[in-house]
Length: 335
Image (cartoon, rainbow, N blue to C red):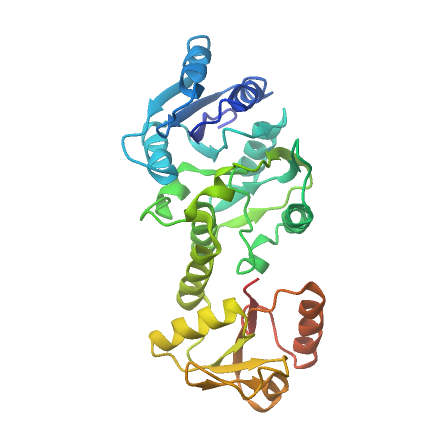
């Protein structure tokens, strides 16, 4: 299969400012054997008519209206209408680099099924990129360059939502977009991880990722922090939790408290530690917080670490190394 059809899935809603630039970047791709399944999720601006006009001049662009509501329903519709052997997703406010489809498809065909082709990304914004997004870009690209994306999967979404490609059969096998669970990009990354699809290393920037104040991931409730932690915890307990180990929660901030409360509600035993002198010895939810160094006296532990400070994380990694503890099997960072 030298030149397989690539199906590009795009959900869109009220992106009239950017959607023409997005579609033009697809039309200009060096790889030309593609189809675009683009689904309007109940837009109230002129973006639908703009896409409709462009579709009249390129029959590879196939426009639909969402029969449901939300990004996941739109993605399901797009995928059900697709016919390509290779599947990728794109966001309607972003821009593809000219060789994106060519590089992703070449990598995927070289490595074969049960692999995910990913590419490096570049954040850009007319308003300027904030430090948090730049930090995420650097972190994500570092993982992508080496294909080690899953090594930190419990920290943040390790596969950029608009910069992956996969064989159709593999996307079906991992039940993508079923059930409706947000944030859908992070959920999909966990599904790839669960099915042991290997990430293919890539050291090329393939995607320009636009940031702006009214972007969906900034304004929609589905992408609020309170949706991320339950998703991480559920997948951790399903995929990496070792019942024979003593579960430990490290940290008593908002995330640590949420996880502790969730574990209590699940009737799961755990130890709770922190390095904040003001919290050590306190009773929270009926659990007494212990100092972090008691980890040295507890046998066979597996820790969920909710400390967000970067310097503290480095110190914690060094501490875990001294205890001969390994990432994932003995501890995971949840932020």
